[in-house]
Image (tube, rainbow over the protein chains, first blue to last red):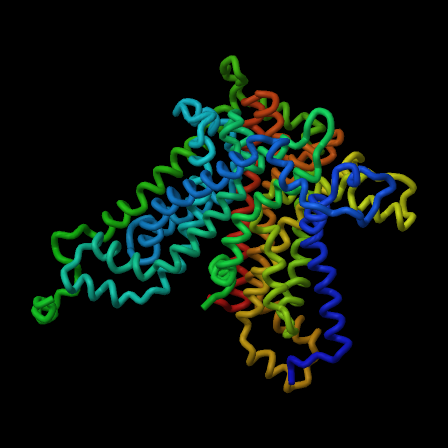
Length: 280
Length: 310
């Protein structure tokens, strides 16, 4: 059949996949290996590919080296969760409007939202810094949450809109026929039907919110206790020496929350995120 | 419920008269999101344009007209930064597209285990970039990193090689790390597009005796062309804007070797508190991105027309 490969071709495909995945996973593998080695082994010269005494010591020592580590992880999850909830409050009504309703300036306003996607925060940092300062939000959680929400609203609207478009219209029409108001229909008919989509979009927003914290944190927040993990990790770079093994251990623990969520939902997420690639 | 039949009988399928008109309701739904974007994105954007005509710092502001722009036009260093940014963008995007196409083709091949391989591609996309870059910092470390270590034991270099310490190697090391961040997204979009190509096309070609390479060139590539175009431009925008990769690896050094427009803007405005000069740079970035966006929309329209999807 068409899909059959010869033995040689199969070997070739696996070999190429191995090279490709090595490139993708090498940093993670090396981070993990480094986290298992005692610091003095890391610093051994000449370079050694293998150590004789791997241990998980760094995973317990890291909490002492950087006492606020637990707090940083909490901050990361807290900021990402807040960003997700607030973003969804803005996104759900807007996405519904774009999916279902007809109104003046529909395309123009959608274009504005999508245009926001093109600017990273880096371009707007200076005035954003002043906006946050005049609102009194610098050096608070809000300094990291507010810009985070702004830059995720467009993505959220885009993803949820294409999901809502797939829900059959007839149910809403039936509700209207029954005399339900528009708001009631949105709340009691559309939202329950859209729950799977809300979860996927919410997760995508969470992952985005978890990933984007660094820039806002180093620019808008000077308070150590509020710092998220990606910024806090740099504390392992001390004045005397860098405790690389603990830094790697902390980094890996720090990506655990997103990895776990992702593994549970990966099938739906990939389909949801790449939906734009497949025209129906 | 009882009045359903009654209403149908009267032919009123619209919501009850007391509910809001569609347009008003729609704008009520969009309004909050729009307002939020206006305060956090649009207004700062306008501020940036205003500040670019100012000499502004921590002390205060003073109108200086086009002086900030004039400085940039005359600065050889800034010209080099622009050239470097475009070189950085084309190189990195080109590599992402080539790797993405190869990766997607491999992941699309009907071999056992591909579901697992597809999941394994994703981590660089979903983890915080800052954390991925810590991994690359470690790989590039001259004394303890595996890359330098392998080069030493293979006899390519005599001693430790610090990838991020020399102008040329730092630049290409940053490109590789940026490609690493961007490749998974490109790969998975290409893969999704490839899966959307109708099997009938392949089977018809196969029956006619077309080989794999021929089918790839004459069916797969044209069919996914719209996605290739949109990914190249999206990825160009992301790469152009790429901040964290460079900032964490090199902070733009050594001796500006990795300073792109974004890094230059950040350094000027945030590190050195030169808000006016930084804003002028930001405005130039916005203009360049605007040109990209127009290009993007037009190319996409053209490609969609040519390859007949919608």
